[in-house]
Amino acid sequence: MKIFNQLALILGIWAIGEYISSFIGDIIAVPGSIIGMILLFILLQLKILKLDNIKEVSNFFLDNMAIFFIPAGVSLINSLSIIRDNIFILIVEIALSTVMVMYITGIVVEKMIKRKTEEN
Image (cartoon, rainbow, N blue to C red; front, top):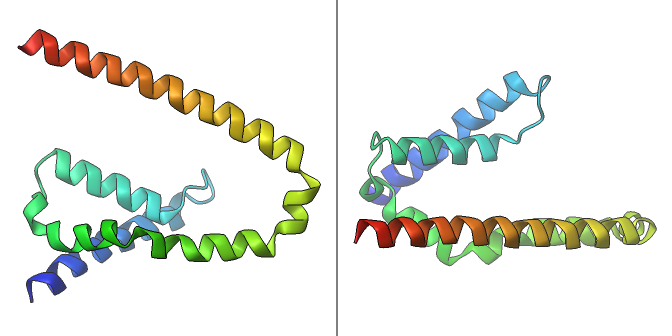
C-alpha cells in the first residue's frame, strides 16, 4: 500500500502540472510534466513533501529511466526526413547548447565548491 500511495502522490503532482499547463498554454507553452517536476522540486525544497514519502517509487523510476526514452526515440525515427533537411542547424544548435551547459555547470560547481570550503 505504501508504494501505491507514493505512486498516487507523484501522479497527482504530475496531474496538477498538466492542469496548470492547460491554463497557461496560451501564454507560454510549457509541458505539464515539466511544471509537475518544478512543483515536486518546490514541495521537496520547502519540506512540504518529505523525500521518504516518494523514495521507493522515485528510485524505481530512476533505475528504469531508459524505458521512458523509447517513445522519444521512436518519434525521432519517424521524423528522420525533417532531421535530414535541417541537419546543419541541428548540429550547430546541439554544439552551442552543449558548450553552454558545460560552461554553466562549471560555474555552478565552482560556486558550490567555494561555498563548501567557506563553510569548513
